[in-house]
Image (tube, rainbow over all chains, first blue to last red; front, side):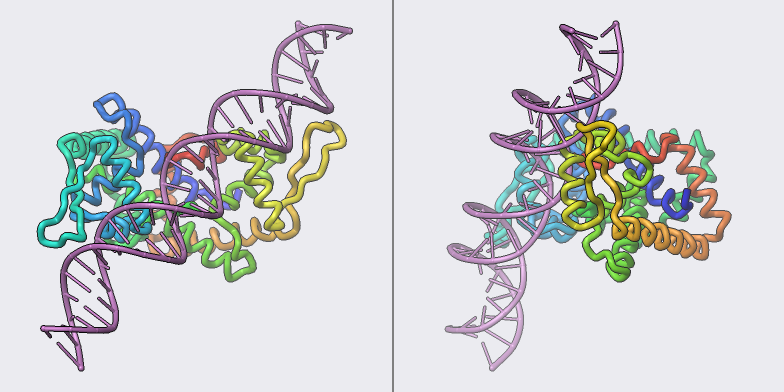
Length: 151
Length: 151
DNA sequence: TCCATATAGTCAATCAGGTTGTCTTTTATG
DNA sequence: CATAAAAGACAACCTGATTGACTATATGGA
C-alpha cells in the first residue's frame, strides 16, 4: 500500500468519525434535523456572515446557493431573516434561539469528543496533532470552501 | 474559540489541501477531468471491486449510484465494461490504460505531498500524526462510505 | 448632482450525484 | 427443480450546487 494514499483517507475518515458522532449526539439533544452543512452555516452566521451574499463568500459558494441554504435553515427554525434598515437591499440573517441552542450544543459535543480523543491519545499527542494540522492548513479557520470540495 | 470546533475543521481543511493539490498536479499530468470521487472509484476498482454492485458495497452507495459513476468514468475513458464470461449477469469493470495511468500518477503525487509534509513537520511528527489518526478511525481503509457523508 | 458601476436578492434552467422502487435475466441453493 | 438471491438497467425523484438574467438599491467619481 502506497503510503501517500493513506494520509488523506485517514484525514477524511477522522473528520467523518467526529461529524457522525456529533450528529448522533445532536439528534438526541433536540436537533435531529441538523445536517453537517447546517452547523457550518450557523457558525458562519454567528461569526458575522449575516447575509446570503457574505455567507456565500465565506463558505465559498454562490450567493444563490447560500440563499437556498438560508431558506432551508429558516424552514427548520434555525434562523430568520430581517430587513436591514440601513440597506434595504439586504436581509440580515439572524440566529433564532433554536439556532443558538444548536450552536451551543455543537460546541458542547465537540468539546466532549475532543476530550474523548485526548483520553485515548493522551493530551500531548492530541495537541501535537492539532499543531501539525494547523501548520499544514491555511490560517483562517473559516474560509473553508466546504461545499463543492467533492465535485 | 472553543477548542473542540477546531479539530474537525482542521481535519477537513487538511484533507482538502491534499486533495486540491492532487488535482492541480493531476490536471498538469494529463488528467484534467479527474474528480476527487473518481480517484476513490478507480482505487476501489483496482482493489477488486470490479462490478457496479461490489463497487457500491465498497463505497457505501447503492448499486445504481455506482453504476452511474462507472458510466461517467467510462465516458471519460478511465474504465471499460466487459461482459463476464463466467457470469452473464455481470459486466466486469476494468481500468483502461488511461485509468491505470491516473492511478499511478495519483500515487506519485500523494507520495510527493506526503514527502512535503514530512519535510515541513519532520518525519517523526508525520508518523505520529498518522498513528494517531489510525488509532481514532476504523481499521479498514477502504470501507469509507465517502459519498453521502455530507447529506 | 447625476450617472456608471457594484452589490443584494430572487427566479429559472440545468447539472451531478445520490435515493427508492420496479423489473428482467441469470446464478446459486435447499 | 423450484425458489431465492444477485446483477444490472430504467424511471422518478431529491438535494445541493451552478450559471445567467433581472430588479432594486447603494455608492463613488466627473
